[in-house]
Length: 440
Image (cartoon, rainbow, N blue to C red; front, side, top):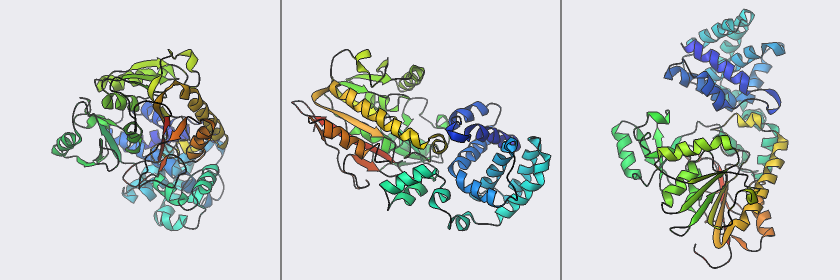
């Protein structure tokens, strides 16, 4: 059945890697293609799809350099098959002879028997070449497989760290979970996983984080169905740990879906009144499903964070969490397709939206309360510069973000880089509102 997995991987990638950012979501297409495949073949399909998206420009550069003439537009599935075969030769430990035999058969299944010889010749040539040697002389944006606009933005923001940031962004991501402190403890969950022959190690940044190896679908892990833990990157767990509120206070999660941080708020503040706001009403059932599995509760609201007059009842919040829509440039290893879906012009719109959310929600924060702003981005325009603009326009706000040794230099908030085997790239800032109240 492995050939079926490879054929489906070609279908997935053809749908995802369309020009001008028009491709479908990688995870959505993978979910559509899984039925009928064994777990092993689902894993193979996903590995090929994620791998090609991670290394797309590098693979494409080698392929085009070694073809006598480009393929016609109508042969796009064949080109995708060649890219996937090249990825499998270069970046997996599967036996080369098996890979070399498999992809010409995929070309036949694509009704392109004319491509079998081409496929065989190209993959044999690639099997004798080291990708690190080949890529060493290439431009960084090709070597690390990012669009030009993103490389230019990272090089501008982080001239000394840009290449390391991109190298980490092409790593396979670790499986990180957040233990539900209402139901268990990190040590107890780790012991249960280890008893079932899973390696579980404690994270160094978040008190509730565990890293689990080998990475597998989370529903296979003992304790998941019981609500003992949730999948959540370690850095993404930190914004909630920065928040403070009275025991029976009122807390808003302003961009709630899919509900991970809403659930974390309910775990940390069991007696608080928690409101989960989401602009996309179709995503609210996912928030409720997460809460139900964890035996937690929150009020769910369908509403636009930039227009609180349409949903706010007039009672101020002690704390507000804004996990803002962003470029996702800090989580490329988890969402490598986002590199090819975002366009340069999208960034300006995202920055505008983030600023509007901050300005709209600040009046909802009590005096003495706080707003925590977070993104999974590495770009300063979305992060420190966004916070600086907000502070410049709001005399009653101050940046009270704790410093962290792991962070990159930042003039506002805290910017964490992606780390090998650890956290994703992530930014957060704790903004406190002047006036009497609780808090640090």
